[in-house]
Length: 184
Image 1 (cartoon, rainbow, N blue to C red):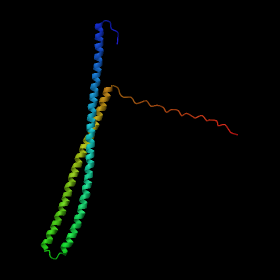
Image 2 (cartoon, rainbow, N blue to C red):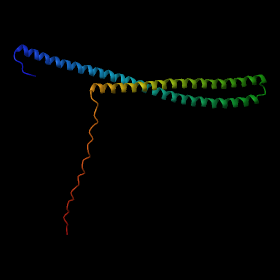
Image 3 (cartoon, one colour):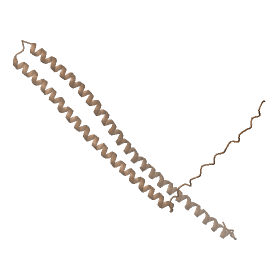
Image 4 (cartoon, helix red, strand yellow):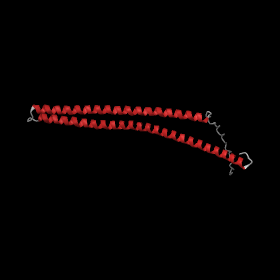
């Protein structure tokens, strides 16, 4: 700071210097606030993207568990049907109408299980498509944010970033051979 004569001029010079410092501090605080907001938004987008990916994975896991359970249930049901048919055929005391009712029940149970499996499979497919679409949308938003923030960083710096200087590898040092005194 230049030397200024007189107390009034000194006060003005100090006030100008303090104003510059305050303006610089305010500018730094504003930039820090903007950067913090950008990072929070980036974290939000990343979290949504990861959540959607985790949901897709969980849907696939639940679907495979459900299909395994339903297949096991189908095997038990088929075995039960076979045993029931054998016992009904052996039962001479049961009238033909009763045997037909039992066959109809078995057919209805099998059809119900098959329809239930189709409905659940369709629901899993719809959920998977939904979350995959959300995941893609979040990926696009993340790319846009990166492009936007890198463009803003270039504009803020004013000059294009220079590539780091590559250094030449250090020359190899040759080890001096030591002369070993001969014993003889």
